Amino acid sequence: MPFSLWKDNTEKSMDQILDNILNYKEWHTPEIDEFDGSVLRFTLNKRYSDNKHIQIGETEITFNVIDYEHEKVRPREKDNEIRPTRVQTITGFVIVFTDGKITKYIMNKSYIPQTLTVLRKINNYSGQLEVSDEKFSIKPDFFFWVVNKVIDFPGAQLGDDQNVGIQLVTGFKGETDDKLAEIIGSGDRILNLISTLTFLLETENLSRVEMLLQHKKDTYGMKLGINSYIEVELEKYTGRYMFHPEEIQSPYIILTMFLIVIPDLFAIYDLEVENDEWNNDRKRSFLNSIGTTIQNRIQEKLGLS
Image 1 (cartoon, rainbow, N blue to C red):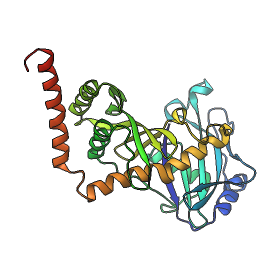
Image 2: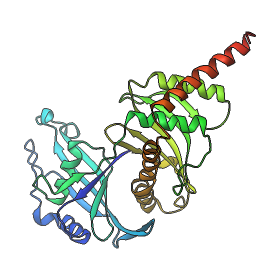
Image 3: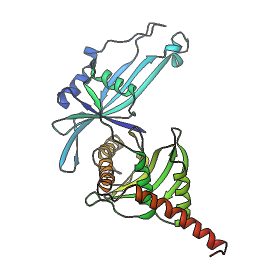
Image 4: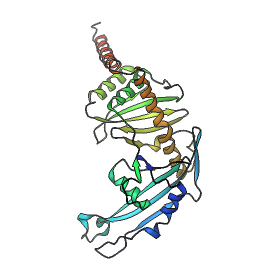
């Protein structure tokens, strides 16, 4: 499931924002289905009666979750007699959280205009600056770096303080998630190198990378891609939140990933680039080593060396 991070710029407190959302019946103008005159559904519900808390590093984060559901008429189907075809139901949830100073949102939608539209709609915002996106910069070079870590440093803990390890990588091509290869940080190195070669031959079209990432004692499944595409694979999570009730487990995992796990991963990559530990020369060396190793192994099998 894709997610996106947004910032509230109104300087309202989290409680003020939640109160306004829950008072939607006072400000929301019901929309009418012109075909039959029925009122289109619009509901906003707070998941927890009392706000929840999670410790992220040295900071306590306060949060709640708004579950929303609203209907809208599909323009092309406005005269269709079958209501499920004529009327679309949109559902989702928003994690509203604060560190006591700034309030932000995590939506279970990617960074697209429709996501911003939903955020404005549930807040009754009408201007252009109340909410802004907060994207992660993800460059194609990052994909090379990730694969290099899995192949040349299997099981290694990355970073001085972050304690991050990349356990598995799967390459994806374009926007259709066509699986190219699976690269695991263990097992037969030659098979991994062949998978890696397949993976890297497609880099011109590569837009996403899936990984299984260990952060401290927890393991997270995620997909990262260009244009700040972030998908959280909740079913692959293992760690301290596993035995929490589902309604609290998912927000814990998502908040931890957005506020510390993903930033830690990018911080390690950025630091290696800054310190010249990862650069074009090292990338070329890595690619050359793949070809050389595979070629030597083939020659061994053919009795040519």
